Image 1 (cartoon, rainbow, N blue to C red):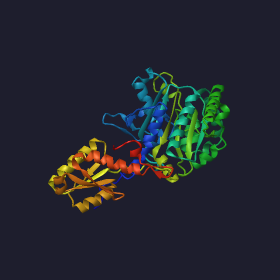
Image 2: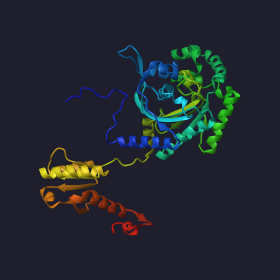
Image 3: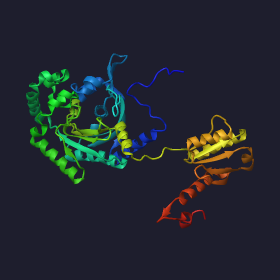
Image 4: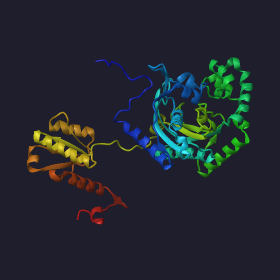
Length: 446
């Protein structure tokens, strides 16, 4: 039988056997951000198109080539978010968060959508962890968000990432840089792609971000922004570097980093992995001091980063990083007979109320088939209940890994289960290579 349809190109299903990896990465990201004082925020998956045209920049690849934009039934132009910062900035302004205590630190887990050629590490629907810090002008803030990203990688066990940083200046000093770029690229105008010929007049810094091989070759000898920084931007960048040095965070200054979005100013950075091929940027971000003002708010210096979760997982898998084992049921209840099924339902309810996971067969199969099912689920313990067990109010609790069995009273099953499972966990604990009787040590069970 043929499928009616398949998943859209550039999208992925995350199956139950894999989703624990996503959950683990997301939990580490949120936990680390909370330790830095960030609180989670959630924004809509689509916004008015103008938000991204104004915020991201209408000369960027994202706006010109990659956005999913459509007219809704009211004739309004709507866009699926291609990145997280613009929506977070809109929410910051619309909800009056600019009137609260600043800086405001927020984080988010979000899906993003870009029409790109799908390949390893690049999807049309992808997911990001991001942070935004609104209302912080000090270079301390730049170094802190870099250290937050670094902390996440450390907690996940990711190695061999290299951090590249740059400063792309403020509007004042960048105007001089744009002039120098125009002079340089004008001599190669006829060799530039059509998009870059247009950018040459409107926003020449975007030529440094072009993916055309010939344009990239031309850009190799273009002027460097660091030679055009004003005193304030230069001092800011030097302080960022000094704080990173104080944190023992290694970095390389790469004057070619400009990032693909127009809202950036001053500090920009990328964490890059060599283990997943061409799409190696796992995290990128920087400062965007003019974005809030561009969207209609007061001048609010801000900064943030976005971390691609699919790329991060690719890196972790390539490096053999450890994940917690996927969750399995604490108890599988095999029941045969109507009375036993009622007992199973009650037992599962009691176990779940005490925080244990308990499952039973929903297809009313034979005991043999039910135990095969329990094996496939990876249940830690099982108990078989039939008419005799219900009559005697007794059943056998079996450790599915060791085969060890304990007879327990069904009326006090939950407490008995806790005692048996704790006993077996304590047996596995050792100090200096010797098993310790923890129950005797702490007076438990007396």
